[in-house]
Image 1 (cartoon, protein in one colour):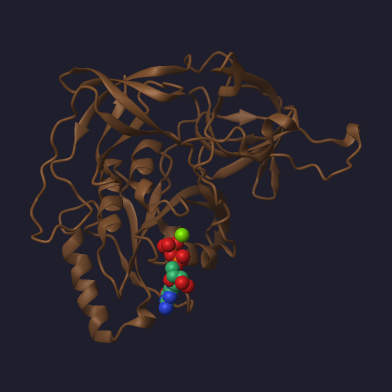
Image 2 (cartoon, rainbow, N blue to C red; image 1 turned 45 degrees about the vertical axis):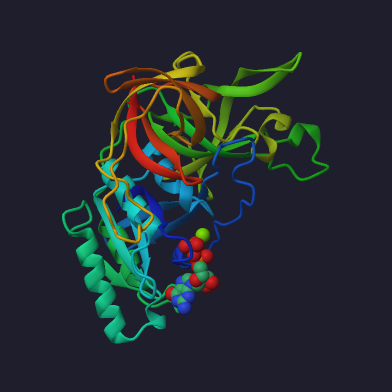
Length: 387
Ligand code: GDP
Ligand code: MG
């Protein structure tokens, strides 16, 4: 029996039932971070894992949720490149809503082809309404990446058809992983696992949890964490990378010696717990020493805007063109698990340079989600790639 790993994004409009479904699929609640935007603008992704199995295979599945941030999820998705497949929830009693559209556009931009559509809250509608909503979903996905996606009628709350979703999750094709490049581990959370009063010789080092995007990590590896920790000198904040060593690795509750991409994982380090506690390092990237580029507050990307603005309904349902990005404009950029605001400092064709509010690790080729503030809302307008 093969053991496989998969990262699944749970997306859809607010209140359509993402968190409820997640808890039914995993038996856990991922909605545990009340201050996801703490530390300025690093999003703490919600993770919940589960193991699914049938006669032929066993899969370790990590669900990536963006608790309470449906507005930012599309931007996050287009900058993160860490999901293999997605579950798109549409509440049958409400139908297609602004974030439903934005999230589908983001999945399309990321070329996430494996999509399962969950028509949720069927307990709240008549059979007739369910059919009408089903037709609306088919119309909505026509010509998109989700055109042939299965649509499963579900009641997350009443636990109807949860098994069907599980069956489909076991069928999704596992994408090929890059295990050879230098590791790129996105730290979603960091914490101290010691109980108060633990004897010094028994103290565990700081634990880092997140997703390995590329490469392979193993026990004993030296790692470097960037941007690192902040230091304040004469009111100037600077960042200092942190070096440490991996002392153990866990996938869920199973200790492993080596990890490759797919599924979330956690590893213990020799880090002083004052550095890792309370998610101090979330949003950072860990790699082998010297392999990550210098952090920067200026990045260059090449970009592409969408043909039209999606999301918010306009009364007349007119198509809204997206004007090009202008000099000095403030754009919200999502890079890996960091969301930061950048001001446009240069434009040359589709190449744009931004001055960022918080520094990032500019890994060439990494994707960037672009959002513009329109009527007080950050709306996904396109995506790019670091050059
Ligand atoms: P999220 O914002 O997408 O994460 O949505 P939640 O999971 O928080 O759900 C929003 C509300 O809808 C909660 O009050 C849930 O109890 C309720 N809900 C979720 N799924 C269902 C369902 O299948 N049927 C009904 N009747 N209510 C549901
Ligand atoms: Mg939720």
